[in-house]
Image 1 (tube, helix red, strand yellow):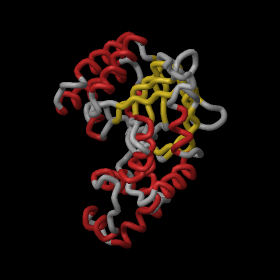
Image 2: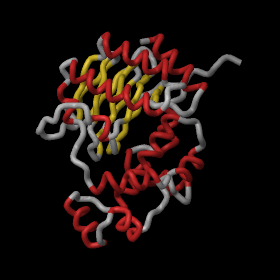
Image 3: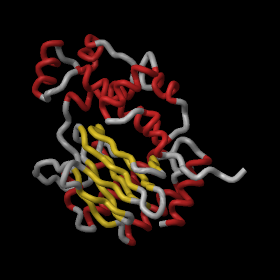
Image 4: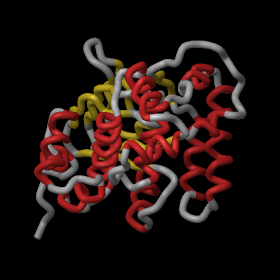
Length: 273
């Protein structure tokens, strides 16, 4: 795992756009109500992750957790003898098309072991990540889902829920770079009336405003974890007109401020002069 972490770290320092994300921290991170807009596969390469509320599920070094596209989950990232380090892959609905159709309720998540086959896949994926075209990356991700199923993790078929209006609106906000979209424009893009849109969202127990906020804050969380951009710049990229508003909404959603989260990514040991 150490060699893989070193390779990933070097790659992320050299290239900003990669088909995976890396979250790392020197100190414990405790986040509540983390929105999961699309299925996420998280390989814990160092440290430990805890999920949910008491009793929490534990995902340790050498394990993975697959999160379904559910609304929110509580997460705790814990360094142990080394900093917490995880590689994250995001999936679209099309990535699941090669899997058997199994009619069962969606799972919030499941945890497995990153055995030799998965380690080899990860190493190969990381090696091609900097140069492979998008079509090849998509094929490799579908291959990974098929591999998980072959290894006995049939719950992978239960990670993708049925398409919802909430998810479609979330995707529209993402495509619009998290800037405002009027209800009229949303209705036009979704080909439905205002009353139909509001009725469907009531059925899903949400609203356009709530979806927009989750999309923006989820993106803000991702940028805080993966970049060194200023909080002011991140708030602007998430569609907030002020850093103070972003900080207020971020703390209300996740239970800590962007500055407090940023501090967990920094070592308490000062480098030598």
